[in-house]
Image 1 (cartoon, one colour):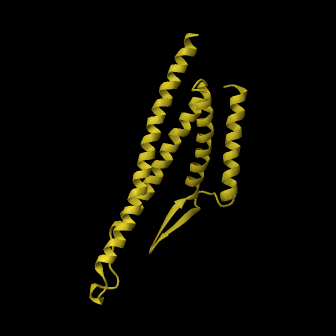
Image 2 (cartoon, rainbow, N blue to C red; image 1 turned 135 degrees about the horizontal axis):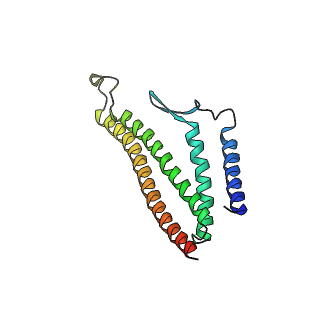
Image 3 (cartoon, rainbow, N blue to C red; image 1 turned 180 degrees about the horizontal axis):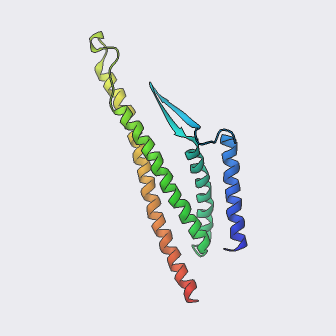
Length: 171
């Protein structure tokens, strides 16, 4: 690894750290702190470290994606760092998908209050419940699509890096 690449990596990590610090501050990024997501009577807790990892990794991914495309996959070290950030993005999106899926399952069952004998419109309540569930299903599908695209791009990056490695080995 060249000195230039080390400086790029350290600079990218510092930028991600500063960005996360501006959002979360130091004291609020411990293992037990979480975002509270309140959906009617249910509270969902999303760990803040997961969001911080996602933001930091997205910054690292964007910087190295631009560098790798600019260099046309010629720098093997840059390609490897891009592939590692892609792999981490896949893992983080998987964890977010599990959280969204649990929210979807919590909202799939519903009970009617006040009772049916009160004369309220049951069709309106059923429609509202379906819309809430459909929104989280859409988010879950989007996360799955992004994961699939990341896996395809990771495969492409691995292929291009392998070709570049073979050319460097032959020279």
